[in-house]
Amino acid sequence: MSNNVMPQGPRASRRAAKPRKRRRGLKITLGVLLVLLLATGGTLYWLYSQLDGNIKGVDINKALGEDRPEKLPTSGQNLLVLGSDSRAGAENEELGGGGSVSGARSDTAMVVHIPEGRSKAVAVSIPRDTLVTRPECVKDDGSTVAGKERVMFNSVYAQVGPACVVKTVEKMSGVRVDHYLEINFAGFKDLVDAIGGVTVDVPQDIDDKASGLHLTAGPQKLDGTESLAYVRTRHGIGDGSDLGRIGLQQQFLMALLSEVKSQDLLGSPANSYKIAKSATQSLTTDSSLASLTSLAEFARSMNGVDPASMETVMLPVAYDTIDPNRVIASEPQSGQLWKAIREDATIPEEAKKSPATGG
Image 1 (tube, helix red, strand yellow):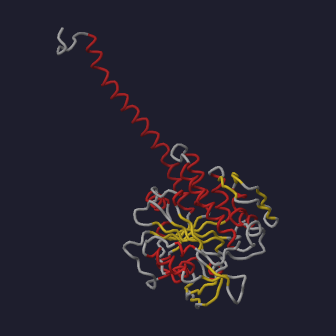
Image 2 (cartoon, rainbow, N blue to C red):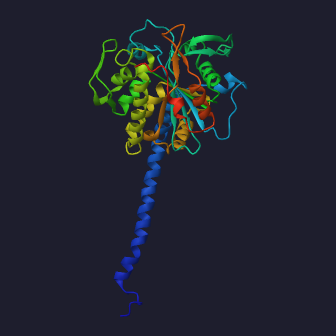
Image 3 (cartoon, helix red, strand yellow):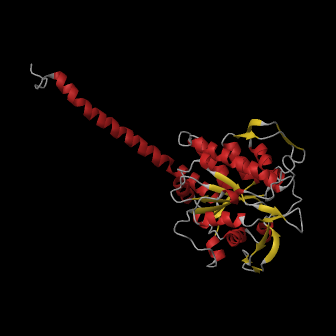
């Protein structure tokens, strides 16, 4: 029989029938999948609505109006990230060390700059004890708060609110803030616990009696409570000032981002939901990010950013000559730093050196 002659008979019929069976099996599978999706659609919508409703939004653009830095074509994206020390709620009160402190302050503040192309990023930490000029701001109730010089940066949040923090950062830096993201004590703790802890390389032994944090130098896997104490410790490292712990905060941020990026979220829907629930319950964003869809789109756009390549810088500061317990932005370094961020340029080495180190 020639190789070009097709086999005949019952054998050939059976062979020809197989594709039809596969197509029939595929139709059955798709049908079952469709039924399952319809059956669980209500549950999926409920889960989505619950998570979506967790996110609180702040209309930064409306609050700030037109008096803002120009958005340059090559300026990339700038995100102001705040860790709030709000004592609101039983868990925040307990994690904050009790309810004797009213209101909330920006316990941690970083301007995260993501250049065009979004393959790398830089995080600039603003020390909470920095004396700044607070511009005139409008509160949530519509009342106007006059501007004031020499106020502590972390007090702006408590005095006027998050929109004024954004305005203060824009005035001191000339950098247009595109997005705002805030997470409180409980949210930070729960997020770390949801991803199973974060491993950090502790630079030196820490014995902080004030927070109860006791760690030996070297790699340590920290749970949520330990992580919160780690990024907040003032007495366990350096001179007890805010400057000493900024290095720990920056180090922890890189470790946290790397851990989140390495999680197989698609392979574990239950874990994905747990992490999303923890993150959204204590999250406040600008109104343009205040939905799961918007957050997911923003996260996808940053998927190419490698946490390992993220640069961390502390705003160069010097000790204030009037009050040595406070710091002020150091010139010309801070001006050079903000100029590089505005222009999406390389940060000069000189702009990374701070006269006050907290060591």
